[in-house]
Image 1: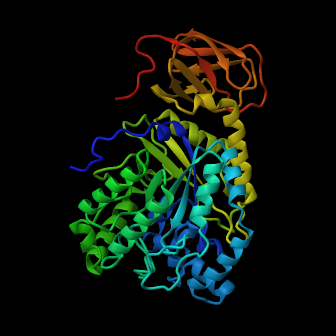
Image 2: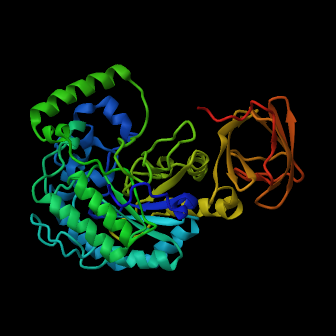
Length: 488
């Protein structure tokens, strides 16, 4: 049995609630992906080339391998069909403008408690001077220690630092064009890649002691080798956490390295998707033997979850910076706050992504504005978020249909209406509570008065325009029997 079996989730991670993901690399130079909506949408509407049409700019290298994609057309027109590897030099030149402390300051200002940096994405390019040489592309890494410099800056700002590594996909080892889901699933490299990925991941652990070890897609080695890696990671970082994207090879996944089985399964999946039409959004990774938390992508759960989880998403439909994004393509700060509060109320964290530009290493203004807005809200209302746990129910609605979320901390109940409360009263349906609370932002007294199966919240002082004002009720709140019970 692995030494880590039965380990408890480290409290710091459960308490942190908000982290910032950073997708930044050579793909940030072209910074292009078509506007196709959510990643789940394209698999429903254009399955046979869905992977090549991804809205994620970090998948650009694969997208330009298919000549019938908007990315390939853009690449021909803008770069004359130059190889993807030609983006290395302009990206390295952009590092001259990079200030890791400025990034850390902006992230800390958002109220985030941890950072996860993409150290190697699917293109295989490493953001640290790895001693593990890529056998296919000479110097496929930075000489500057981007990972180390950001780790130091983040920790100086009082935050935890974590690393992302693309363990399941590396196009420098397997350059085959990917168009369908089964192409993608079956593209995990074999042979020398197993030792390469394991050695690089161990190097990241040894050099940077990351508090989060965030793998993507899958893992190429055996489960026994993976368990040994986890044992060594937890020995090096006792309060570290690992995510759930470590699915090791199976007979089926090995079979999918061949084209005929991929073709058969693709036709089945395409037919099912066409018949189903609109379905669940986003991506939920399959279960694995061990993880500290789950990582649904662009997904919001309906109910409180039994296991710790972390919602991950970009501010728009891409993680990497997309030059096509306008203000209208970014979710509003209020919507991103809703995503955070909704996740926390159901036992999750939010890992919210930023995608800096490649040519000047700057975080785009629309992203900075949203980090600032989230930070301003958390400075006033963070007691209802940090170190909280789910209540008996996660959600309710106001009489006007606006969403309401609940959290608890100690004996305190936190009520967070996800709407601007301008008047002196607010009615919350579905729960009957009584007691005296306080608006966290300014200490305003709030009376909770039960009215049948609803609660009237009466604010001593109206505060016009304040979005999602959290109200804390010390000692909990009296509640009618049978109401506010979590779903089984």
